[in-house]
Image 1 (tube, one colour):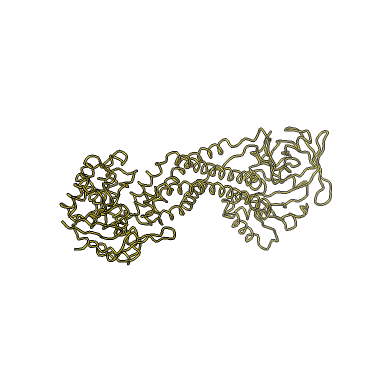
Image 2: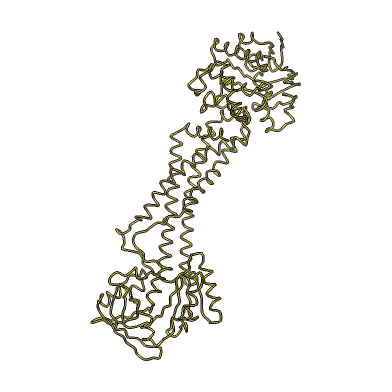
Amino acid sequence: MRMLLKLAWRNIWRQPRRTLITIAAMAIGVAFSMAAIALSDGLFEQGFDTVVTRSLGHVQIHAPAFPQERALYDTIDDADSLLAQVAALPLTAAAAQRLFGYVLLAASDQAAGALLTGVAPGREQALTRVAERVLRGRFLDPQPGSQIVLGEGLAETLQVDVGGEVVAVAQAADGALASELLRVVGVVRTGSVATDRAGAFVHLAGLRSMLGLERQAHEIALLARELDQIPALAEGCRTALAGRGLLVRDWRQVQPAVAQLLNLQSVTVWIVLFTVFSVAALGILNTSLMSVFERTQELGVLLALGLGPRRTVALVLLESCCLAALAALAGGALGLLLDWYLVRRGIDLGFITQGWSWMGALFEPVLHGSLQAYGALATIGGLFAVTLLASLWPAWRAARLQPVVAMRQE
Amino acid sequence: MAIVTTENLSKEYQQGALLVPALREVSLTIEAGEFTALMGPSGSGKTTLLNIIGGLDAPTSGRVVVDGVDLAKVSAAERSRLRLNRLGFVFQAYNLIPVLSAYENAEFVLLLQGRGEAERKKAVLEMLDEVGLKGLGGRRPNELSGGQQQRVAVARAIASQPALVLADEPTANLDSKTGRELIDTMRQLNAERGVTFLFATHDHKVIEQAHRVVRLVDGQVAEDIKR
């Protein structure tokens, strides 16, 4: 085998220009495939983070009618104790409850309808990292108080900023009109188009008091410790809350369209990879066939000397594998450079757009990649698989040569 | 002991609608240790006979037994193994592997046979020495003269100590002096190592050196002279 490898290695350098062109084409394919995977993974992570982790949570618990009706009365009763129960599950990384209330917010000269989300600041920050998205001011203090954090668009509509005051007016659960004066402590850009345009965060206890829903919540959201544990966490919640008549869904059930689009994105990448590798396969097939045709006489001599069909196949495959190995090295290095750039710098579309919206979430104009080992392994593994497949036919042709006929060829 | 036996060996080639006979009923026995020249004009069937004896081509009819193996009764893979382990080839156009050095070319068959490194080194260095290429083992074929390349081919054919070396016009591409030197080397190997040679040639100066001369005319044995 060592001798065949030596022979294969020297054979590929008989036509150095052709070899270098083939390697360059394969290497560029490898590098751009790795970059495409990294960018796709980055977009997936960005989309998942924005749409799922920062907004939905991995698992949600509601009263059965709430997702359809979003009515004030469709609440989870005794939410505090239920939250403590699911937060203690071993797969739970974070859990928080939310209470929603549609209110009229009024500043000095402006008023606007808004959706208030009542949260426990500490738990909410662990779940959605919303505090990291505060543009001005700060997020709600841990201790309950008459504070509000406005969505960026809502603050513009109300023409109010940090330090200002707004009055919230709402109809409470008992039908009475309730109002509260709230001090603006922060302005946030969550990435959710709806929240940023017409949403605001207040303390859970304050909203409960205002709406007359003292121990209730509309939603309990949870994060799993690992993404692959999400279905198990949802199942754990269902078991823990059995008999309570609550609806437990993972994010795929909450937003099936998001799940489908995220899946479609990875399919698209594999289609791109298939196309790139198909083109690479044609290049390898061409190089390998040319090499076999050009050396027909020499292959005839090798067969005459007793090389044997199996070793002849091995020789041609090894030649292609040498090309693939060089392309993997060069392409892998270039791919890692591209991946590094995508991870560290990203592709800045700031000259075209200030951001873009997808599934109700606002994305940054900079597209970042995500570096994962499988991207390089899948690409390089794919390269070798395609190389071997594309070389099988030339190898088979070489092995089937009749020595006496092959040796007569010029 | 007979190394090669052919019985009523015939070979016909199809050329368009015509069947052209290349060999007609050739019966021949080559004994171990012989230094035999096959002579005859171009088209007399010398190369065809060598190819059939070497298992590179199949006869239309008749029987060939090489080193006790009836070539018609074994598979292509077994014929390949026979060539590898029992036969050596020297071709008119040298046919060295251009990307390998003289040493590596001579070593090639031994590597295919799976011989150990020490054994290969000893055999190759000895052979290169015997064919007069001592110190030139590191050169690639394109760095050697025609005569030197053919000597490498002889070293490659003999390094594995085959039962029979088949040489097709080994001096045809060499000048007469170099050709004579090559034949002298082959004669020496035949005498000292007992290697059996069967070579095709139409060079009368070369034929003079042979122990036995088989003359082919129109695919038939016209003369078989033992000296």
